[in-house]
Length: 302
Image (cartoon, rainbow, N blue to C red; front, side):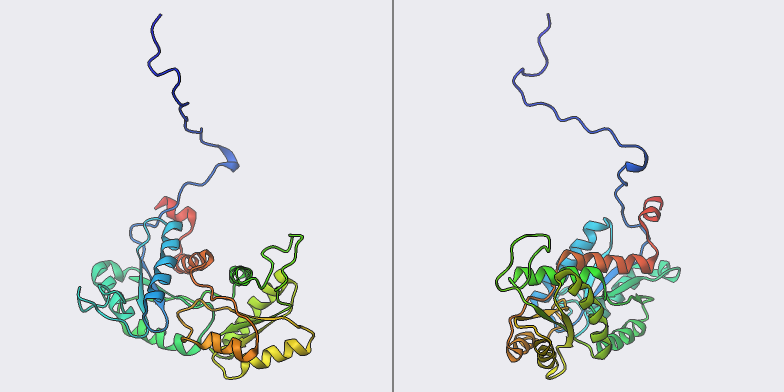
């Protein structure tokens, strides 16, 4: 009798699962077409290490969802070229104009058939002043890039705000749970920035958040003096006793100290900005794919 070719006491060998067939078959991994435009994330506010780290993480999420994606970032206010060159991309804080110039140069004639880049603003809502400047910069770059809409309003933003409130102990993480949070707020001031249009958009996200938390939510402009305090007063007059300030903002667009000052003036605790919550990366990618016309099916067949 021949001896076995493997040790009798070895670990079992894991065999690959057979592929499922039919409608329950898992979809093939999706990757970006080779000729797809670059995704350029337009980061608002002044350049900082925190903003750079946040933007890098958002792009990392987008790349993980669409392998092969050419994803870059550029700061819309300030930025430096760094030692690597004058186009703004080689430095620690690349400028949007520099990145668009480099992408257009890299793509050359191929950029004539389709946009060289799709610029996605890292903004949760329509900040009118910033968007006007951004449109002028994209159009004036001569790079053939196009600009998408902002990320909200969207149900995923309501989810992200809910998570940030729960992390701060200001809301239950799940309505289905049977315990309560002693510090949970019974009224939410949803802070945004960018004027009346931004407040209206945040109001839509606020309705979705209110449905999740079963508490009243009112939107207020963080960059309008006294708006947060006035909104907090309305909630108190309507019966809310424990208020919380929840930013429907990602982070780089908030001037330093403004959020904390508004919370102190209104006399309520605050949750953290949305930051690099996974849904932000997915919304950035969704805006890009909608503009380019990429779907899971079309990406597979190219």
